[in-house]
Image 1 (cartoon, rainbow, N blue to C red):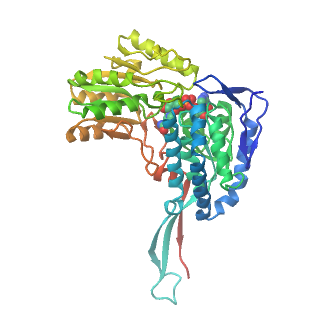
Image 2 (image 1 turned 180 degrees about the vertical axis):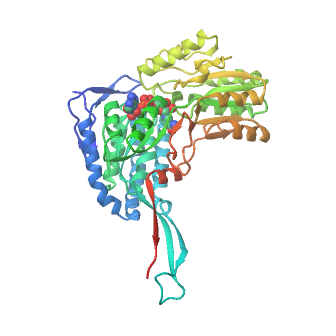
Image 3 (image 1 turned 30 degrees about the vertical axis):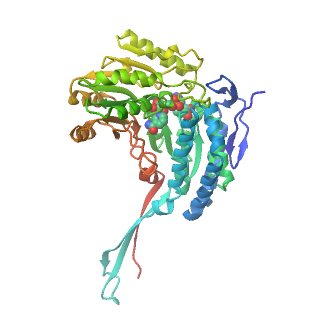
Amino acid sequence: MTHTVEHFIDGKRVSPGSGKKCDVVNPATGEVLGEVGMEEVAAADCAVASAASAYQAWSQTPVGDRCQVLFRYKELLEKHFDELTQMIVDEHGKTTAEARGDVRRGIDCVEYACGAPSLMMGRTLPRIAVSTSFSREREEGIPLDSSLERVPIGVCVGITPFNFPIMVPLWMWPIAVACGNTFVLKPSEKVSLCALREVELASEAGLPPGVLNMVTGGPDVVNHLLTHEDVKAVSFVGSTVVAKHIYKTASIAGKRVQCMAGAKNTMIIMPDANQDAAIDGVISSSMGNTGQRCLAGSVAVLVGDTPDWFIPKIVAAAKQINVAKGDATGCTMGPLIDDASVQRVNNAIEAGIEVGAELLLDGREVKLKGFVGPTIFDNVPHDSALAMEEIFGPVLSILRVDTLDEAIAVTQRSPYGNMAVMFTDSGYAANKFKDTAGAGMIGINVGVPAPMAVFPFCGWKDSFFGTLHSNGEDSVRFYTEGRILVSRWF
Ligand code: NAD
């Protein structure tokens, strides 16, 4: 009998109801690992109720004590590192190395959250004024002091995508609970097993029942949570089309909202670039995680005579990629997440051929079910879907231009603004690019400029909706309210 993925509510696993289910599939083998309840609205209500009732005691628990649980949780993540890595390989399909990166970058976020006692500190300005009106007996007057405190906001909800099953939930809930909030996580239905284990380990570390809950589900569950009267804040990571819906719906319902969304990232390669670094950077950016990353550089803009050296080297490097099951020996690229993704990527390749782009390497030649190999197009029309739309697969589109300004114009035209990268030896070109590219995360001679957990994940334009991003100082401000105190003592 197929195992149904449980919810985690009030400190324990809870069986889902009888509504519609969807399969959790190992994308490399097609094996069904379990099924997930998609219409778990009643469970979502229980999770919010549990989080709301836990909030009273948790928000009053000293921040240092809250962080002790996270220190223990970090130790548990280290202890279960290999188990979590293998779960990602099985449920998502990443290579073992990529899965290890997913867990490691997630642990970084827990470590950051352990600093909440410093991060949450407010500010004080003594003697903002002196009042004399009630101080007949004190000639020097009575001082007014003022301070800003940061306090938690209540029940927060996190809705996460499939592509970083362990890390992206850890962008959200550790810092939220460290700041004194309670949390309901709704992970992607494609990777709920990983999320369940992540949440369960937090309970094992000593997080009290109700502080962190998880419900499985799809759009019905999300939409219910977005407008729930006991939910104060919503964090979302996923595609732009869903992000727009979530930002609008939750904002109208009066929630604080942050939505990290989709992307189409450009990499400019100047003729003077360090060739090995550029090839290495473009390969890892475009093909890493089988192209399923919001920081995937999927468009390479070649300036001047760059194509002379870049084209032969990039094709040779892509041919070295070993497509296989993520934990197979020597594997450097795993499958796509599901059949729908394979279809979407194949359609994008077909559309590229139709608009006249030159197919240098065709990933469809990899004849493994669930897989598309490295794909490279040259001479891609600048306004085509290949150049403008997120594909979320291992497809690199090469555009050619004559000048630096034309290259920068390509990045500026994109509706997205997650990241932009330049490979060059020129400080002038790099500085001009940084200031004008129109993206929130810039890489100079770096293929994937992923910020460490201490910095915000700074997408711009259609890659982000909100004011405060996830991670870093932004996340502390997102998960806390400022409170001003003005006081005087007679
Ligand atoms: P997705 O938008 O399909 O799903 C994300 C979450 O939203 C899931 O939990 C899903 O159940 C839910 N959802 C899906 N459709 C919904 C609907 N109609 N109404 C309400 N909820 C809905 O995204 P995905 O395919 O899981 O992830 C890939 C996307 O995430 C890519 O676009 C990628 O660029 C983006 N992403 C962005 C970042 C970032 O930080 N900017 C990070 C990782 C991934």
